[in-house]
Length: 358
Ligand code: NAD
Image 1 (cartoon, rainbow, N blue to C red):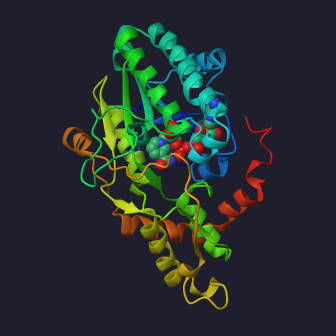
Image 2: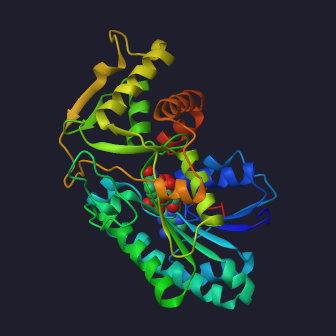
Image 3: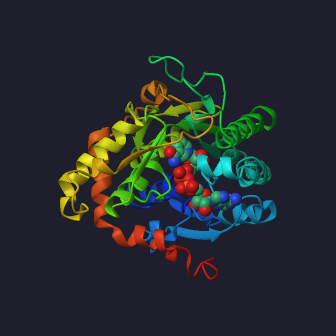
């Protein structure tokens, strides 16, 4: 349908959320209210390309404040709530799990309650078309033992880290709100994303920016961990398809069919930087590869994730547009061309002026 819809996006100043907001405003006629607390991971500069749009609004808000979320819902009257707000970094969840429990579990619970109350207030025809779309990760499925099996939508949950356990808990809450209260929900579980505007603590941008600064490239353990990589704009398109056309109560796995060992990813980055940024390579190095150093593995580190994304392809016709090779090249080029964005993150300047930003 070509009806204009109102999307309330939580976490729209984050990596994936900002890609969804940019895609909605540049490729569709839909309206967006972005609700984000602006933690360290939220960056309003990732919304610069669309923030002037008359179809865009921003509210700085914690999803855990049910009264405030309820007021935003009644005021904006969304057709779709797409929930991406979360604490998302595995290493931080090991150093300090509290915020992960608070936002990912308790925050999702509060948001579900605010949405249920709003949904019940809608007239019958709008109540039927309302959707609560919960955005989650393939890490809820835990580790894959063999080399050949894949996670499907019916794989049992077996999370390993505080991060993935908190996401698993939130997935269960969302499904319970559908089965117990009838809230029309859809859930997606996606593999590792990469691409432009990715916060530098994550593997790919961390390696690119360390390399450009001539710093060591730390690889956990032997670098043999396998991840399935998806270009963030492919994920954003998949999310919009599921939110607008997915069947109520269904789960869709989203992935890129791009399984790579971490060391292969780092190697590819070094190769691209040797090609695209040879003049910035520290004197005396023949390749950025010489910066690679192996460091002690993280505890509970899952060896392999790989996702079967055939359901979303079959039922909604979604497939990724980027291969790993095309997407990783675009990503390196983006970091080389958008130095102000990441320099402001590294210096902390991206957090200036937040108090007035509501
Ligand atoms: P991110 O850390 O880049 O962004 C999270 C955003 O949520 C930030 O803008 C932050 O300010 C906001 N936020 C945090 N706590 C909040 C709160 N209490 N109230 C309101 N806003 C809050 O994360 P991301 O990588 O963009 O991931 C988005 C979602 O997608 C998460 O739910 C994550 O679990 C899921 N996911 C991520 C990946 C990945 O590879 N990055 C893969 C699959 C699923």
